[in-house]
Length: 170
Ligand SMILES: C[S@@+](CC[C@H](N)C(=O)[O-])C[C@H]1O[C@@H](n2cnc3c(N)ncnc32)[C@H](O)[C@@H]1O
Image (cartoon, rainbow, N blue to C red; front, side, top):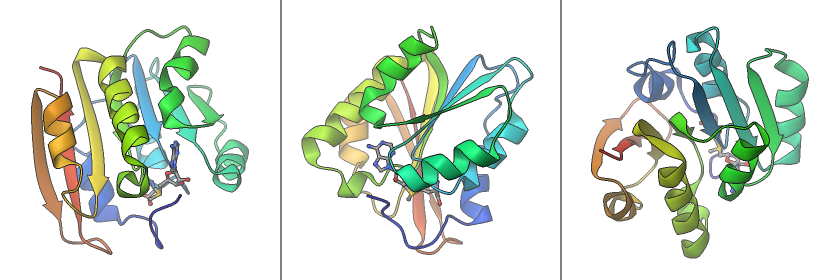
């Protein structure tokens, strides 16, 4: 369910997040935060009126994040990324500007993986961006099918080395 034995490196966090401007975004989503290495960096980059929705399936990680993150802009929910729309509806939000994901896609069954990626595409606004890392190019074909623009960059300074995907609707 976790898909990794160690948290991601600072280098991977930079490659995932440094180019993204959350300061004027209305709504940002993080899927599969785990211990929160990316969550902390996302919060540092949020605008004062930006809302962040964080969805984590694992009860221990969820409780830990809930107890340590008290920022009013951040809404932490326990559940599956496949229920993204439900969680957004609860916050009265229609679309997201950015969706950042560390979901272990390679370990998620085919049908659920497709459902999650289609859901992500549906919930993104037209100018939105989806950022995901993986330890392989396993989901590249799926991303190309669902999104109009897909780019991928390697991050060698991570254990294990990773690929960072950036996917856009337009
Ligand atoms: C590789 S860890 C990511 C941790 C951290 N972001 C990092 O990069 O070190 C993946 C996380 O995704 C969570 N996860 C797995 N399947 C999920 C799902 N369907 N919905 C939400 N979270 C899920 C796991 O519980 C785990 O915390």
